[in-house]
Length: 310
Ligand SMILES: [Zn+2]
Image (tube, rainbow, N blue to C red):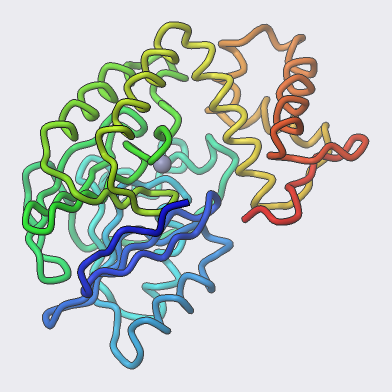
């Protein structure tokens, strides 16, 4: 495995895993800012990481690339610690202001997020000074219609959120509900290809440099998903099941089946794959595949997260 690429001294990446997104700490004389805050159950750990890195200094600003629970779940805890400003994607502002649980993604995905407030918004084309660099806000629909990325042309850095990982990208959620997402994701990948990027800081996984190869993998994965949307639905279910197990560590088959029936995003994905009567079989099939790849452990009627997984 290659070492993580060098980043400017003003930027630190806390690589977290899959339950929590990475956190990017950018510090300059004017302010200390954190891009994305991890999952709710990791909030104390996120606070400890930031506090350790900042020493006596306060966190001044939180920036969220998008409002999935693994990217904004630490907001409330950090805001309780420091009276920091918080910027969220402009398109998400109304539903956060009202804390509209039917439209926020947390219930739909069977996840949780403590309520938080925001002080400002981010829209594509706007600029932001962070860590001594000038960043452009770049729209990144596809995985999430409201998501943004941050690009700094000076150091040639891209904070890509879940639009581009070293190996793939996040679930294309809009397609689960019959809305367009593949076309948007394609356009986002094309937009990234046009940027001059030395290092990508993804939402999950370590920062990486070989952007061309990552884009190539992402384009071919997207084409594969697009050719048969059931693949996206199946991937979504797997990702959401594994995520839930990372949070709660273990669930019974019946509890997982209930989640499939009650959480809107899972239900929409399952509906793409077959009628309700087929869902128990579908769940066993997916669990079997996940067990084979080591993403979960089947223990009788209990499904468990692997011991080492975070
Ligand atoms: Zn996401």
